[in-house]
Every structure is written in structure tokens, then in C-alpha cells.
Image (cartoon, rainbow, N blue to C red; front, side, top):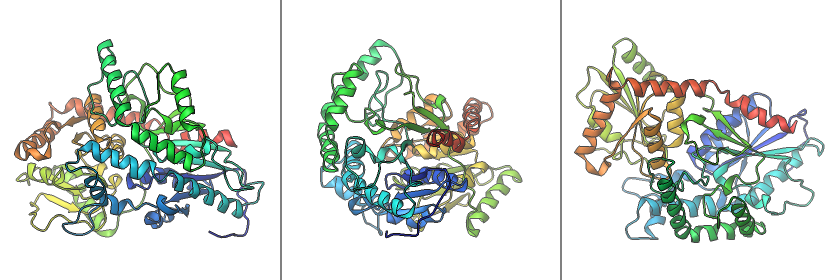
Length: 495
């Protein structure tokens, strides 16, 4: 990174953003970073080189991850060539002959969240060194804003050293871009099989058993986490976590008990509070809900703007209902949701237009797929460009997609099976702003029929009234929160 002429930036501290190298986590983190940059904050983003162009295009200063922290999610999650499997599938298939969704989640824990921790700490050291070379000592005051699942500051919080003459950051903010993995007597571990929320004694006994089973099942991952924090230079991490749990009246520490939030001055949670369960423990004192991330102001390229204009015309002038279907950027096999949605609404050219978003630039549907006349397929399109003109949003319930649905007041049909998506699906149904599909895409015709019924229910003037109302209520709650202003209120403690 080299040395540079030292510059001044006024009284504002320097912000060093980072996240795990996954598109769905980078996007909201970068949206906040770029908005703060536009307001005059000096902002750096420590991230993967695969996303350097995207990060740099926002105007923030890009700094690269080092070694195995420089992970390419585009090759890990997306097949490279026809007939290929992803790097993630190759890893999972190497651990079990018949991988389950839980096997795939545990693979993500190992490969994505835990194993790169030492390299992330080395990346932090290099980034801080670069910043202190760039700015005079009197003004090189750094606040780290880390997406929480990166475990980015765990080693530093537990004594890992920085290079000589490099001071510690003056502050730290965790940015939570998903349902936070916190332990509660009312909620089972985040990636366990979701169960319907309740607060009865019998339910809490069930939750307690799930946590005990979870602790046994994830002991190996917890030991790996401790090992990687210690490799990075952290000390007594496991002891500190066990002490914390005993202070809360629990016998031992289990993975996903909130360890990724320990040590931060502030936690900024993307989302609205009423979307979350009310638990006995409540929210930590340093927790702030920041609503929806700022909407994208980038104008789509010409061809995609033409598609948006066509959708607006069909909806406003021709009276058609618009259904957008997308599977995010991770679980992008179109058989799971995109193709069933297109099939479910085939033949409704007179009243319905389907827009299918494939999730990555350059992606196409398989060559043997025939796209009906009432469907438009696009490789990539920002949700903020299309959701203002949408009646139903069909999604596999990635947290970012759900929050976009809330931010635009669009009712949803949800059907997710991977990572935290199962839990997100249950929460959408519980909160009432969407319809949960119970069948699996593997059920073929039954799944397609259920999907058609769910979309039809939301579109129906009477049957969909309550779902549409709930969606608008959540939008109003999100609109009442200024995301960037709320983050700046946390940053003001360092001025």
C-alpha cells in the first residue's frame, strides 16, 4: 500500500469499514459507507479484491484483504461454467456423501466466518499501518465499522497485538445486516430448524433443549473459533466467553450466543424493531435500529432502464400486476424459485408481468428454458430500481431482500432453505407482510400450484388486504428512521 503525502481531514475520525467478502453483506455495508463518504467523512473499506471495482466506484478508498481473507464469493457460490459445481458444493461434498442444508451452513461457518480470522487480523494491521502513513499522527484517529459476522475485531478485543507505533482504533461499531445471533430463553440458535415463536414455559423448555443439543453439535466449530482467535494473537477468548455466560446465569458458552458483538461500543442493526421477536432479555443497551439502508441512487444502464420503463408502463397504463422474483446472490439455482414462479404465472399475459432477476451480471437461464411472453429475465437489477413498481416480491428470503421488501412496502412470497433464510421465512409469515410457502421446489407441480395460490392471494382485493396493510405499516416504520443520521449519532460519540 506504500506511503503517501500526509493529509488533513478536519475533526472527523477516519472510518474503516469492513465485512465478510459476500455480496449480500458487502452491499448494505458499502451503501452506508458511501453515504457517510458523501457527507464528508473520510472512509476506507477493507474488502476482497474481487469487489474492488464496486467498492472504489462509490468514492470510498479501497484497501485489500490479505492472504485467505481475500475470499472470492463469486467463485465460492456461483458455478463457473455450464455443468460445473460451486467451490462451496465441492467443500461440502468432501465432508459428507449426502450433504444437508445444515452441512452447508457448517461449511460456511468454517470456510467463510472462522478460518480467515487470523488473515483478517493481519489485514487490519496492514490497513491501520497504511492509514497512519497517510495521515498525520494528530488526526489519524480511526473508528472501525465492522459487519458483525466478520468476527473482524475478536482478536483485537482479546489482546491481539497491532504493529509497533500503531495505536488502537478510538472506537468500534458493529453493523448487523441479518437477524443477530443472540442467545435467549425465547429463541433457539439462528440456524437451527425454525419453530413458531411462543413464550410459554413449555416452549422455553423446548428452546433450552435445542440450545443444549446445539452446543454439542457445534463443539468442533467453537473449538475452531477459539483456535483461530488465538492464532491471531488473542488471549483467553474462551475463558472470557465462559465468564460472560455465567454472569448471565448460563452454564456454558455456545456458538452464536452473541460473541460477534462483544466489545463494540455500538451496534447498528439494519431493520425495524417491530419485525423482531420480543424476548425476555430485550436488546443490549448499545443497540440501535437504523431502519432500511439508503436506497440506491444509481441509474441502471440503458437496457435495464428500458426494462424498468416497460414495467412502469405495464403497471400504470395497462393495469397489469407486476411480480418480481429473485433468489439473491448465493442460492441462485433457478429451479428453486425463478422457474417455478415463471411457470406458475404462465398464461396470464393480459393481467400479470413477471420480472426474474438472476442475481449476477452475465448469468442466463439454461438454454432449454422457454420464457413465456409475460416474463422478462434480467441478469442483475438493483431492487431499488424495480420494487417501487412491484405488486408482489417473490424471494428466497435473504435478509437484504426482506429488508428491501419492507423498505418499499411490497408484500412478499417467501421460500428459503439455506443459511438464515429458513428463519427469515418464518419471521415474514409471523409479521404478516408475506406468505410463506410450505412445499419444497422438489415437489414440482405442488410447489408451482402453491406459489400461484400465494401470489394470487396477495393480488386479491379482499384476501390480500391484510398482507398489503402489514407491508405498508413496516414501510412507514422504516421511513421514520433516518439510517445515516442514526449511524452518525453513534459516530458523534467520537467527535
